[in-house]
Image (cartoon, rainbow, N blue to C red; front, side, top):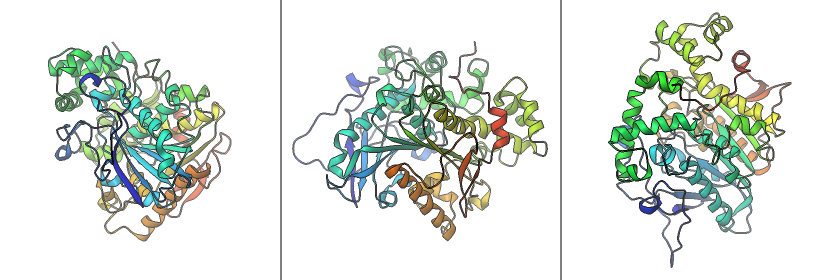
Length: 481
């Protein structure tokens, strides 16, 4: 295995390039070392304060890392490009859970990348292009197309894959004209349904700028050091409930940053774009975990302690339609308040957006395979079930390194190792020839791969939720007042 780390794919987005679209990287003379990861972009410390990064270790944030089992231009291996998640506010390709040695060992060239986050990458700023973090991802894919053959990869067999905000980024790239032709296949894991209208995004950016005492413009924010911006985003994150009447649903599960449906970089939501055939030539693999929200309930300190009032608030804010709360209670008559709380949060944020992406791809004439991870993780005494993020160690095979590995249990069981091998095999087979090993999804049979021990193919399990959400369109979230 040959590994190359910290290869720049664009100029550092600082100085004259700050808040601009990524600029082509300048070449260099001689041999450049590629043994160390590039510095992570400045990012939030909300969920892992001890590891919060500020950019003090360099501004060459826009780099890729690459694992190849055969660095020969004639090898022609399938290529997999990983987009890290983290709520569009965190994300660092150097984390041990993203080491791609096991995945590349299955016969693919694997690339991981960094992109701008938070205010730098996603705030709606006067004078700056929208969705700069997504434009960074496009620049990385352009680098892959131009250079990957030299590392043994086939530029015509590129698969993008990502989880959570990475899955949302994959969905956005499917809808972006600038990304057309840069990849042949896509794997979207736990796609969040949060895409912002320009008005909502601008209002959030104004609040972030006010936190810093500047205007939400390129000139105003450029006067603030990059290291200070994540703190402003974290402050708004912590206070979002005070904007509930203006920002609505995103204040319930605090989400200050997301792709913006600006009409240019991102012309439409992924669901609308795919239904309109924007990605009909791209083969799609999409799915989610069964218990998507339990991890967030643990982080929020409410796991096992959800009150009836919290459940009623969640149902009122998130369930689709004016009578959504009543319909949820009627559809799940035996569910406890806690179970309803977990269901509506999971459905709104990840489960139904992922399913609807599959339906939209079908509506637009494309092919799609669907999966659901149902294996209950034994780590942490099994409290989190098949929670958000459990798929990451299973896809990469890093079952004992990186923070998500705590979900697997120590030491990893033979069942966990077998399941990881099966998922890795499915992902790499899909990248190689478009067939992960189970039938395509359709609206007649609705077959999905259920990843458990053992895995099975069956009708999609979440039929009750599907019917509750079948008329919802996941539009760009508006500014309410």
